[in-house]
Amino acid sequence: MMISAQSDDPWVAVREALDRTADDGGTTRFWLRDDDAIAVTPALNRLGELSGSHSMPVLLAVIPAGATAPLAAWVAERTWVTPCQHGWAHTNHARPGERACELGGDRPDEVVLAELAEGRRALHDLFGSGSADTLVPPWNRIRPSVLPALPQAGYRTLSTFDRPTPGGVDGLKLLNCDLDLIDWRNGRRGRSIRDLCGRLVRAIDAARLHRGPIGLLAHHLAHDEAAWDFLEQFFDEVRPSPAVSFMAVAAADSTIRAD
Image 1: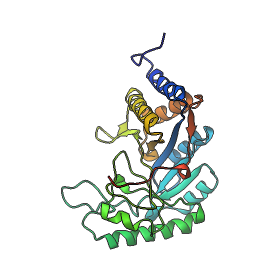
Image 2: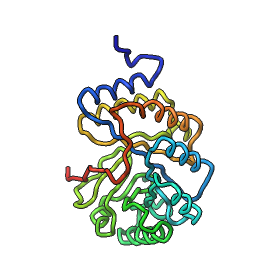
Image 3: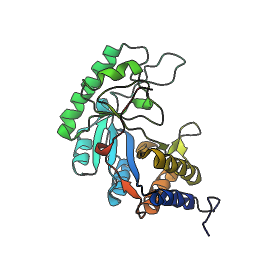
Image 4: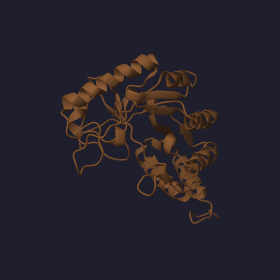
């Protein structure tokens, strides 16, 4: 008899969702993005060891204005970690009363794009050609009017979180995260494993229909033990499934299209 999702073990429902994908002849693709990297810290080392031991590629969103040479050396020693650009300085330029935003706010598009260009140069100086042509906007927000200029500026992929991006941009892929490990509104703490497993089941079932990848969003500097516990259990639980693959950002295949 099939165990229902009401089991005391929240991972049972996850395994059942993966089985549904396998029964349909599909594969669930997971990828991992980690934000706000500047320097090598114990938390970053922990993330690197955990992901590396499970052969999970990491898209590391680096803040160019504060990034350090030791971080570049750390990345160079870890082939499974790919740096990308996380805005410029992670500075809020939103108008009063609006939600935090660096790539927009009360500044002209030209100023935003000039800062992004400076950030690209800074990352190239640190990482050379090893940095992905991916832009991760701070706070996952970017003013829509900035989007059309991104491909010409060298960006091939835009990565935000679980929100549609208005309009269509030729030459720009969209690779959004689906599952944020941190509950920012309730104490900046790791979500419970039961909560995350429930979200994971919904993401797996949705991905089974549109065949898209599922992105996990980590913030190593903000992780408490609940967040680390989920990541460790995630690898232990999903890795053995024949219906699971871990994906590098270069394998993204979703394109921004007009609504």
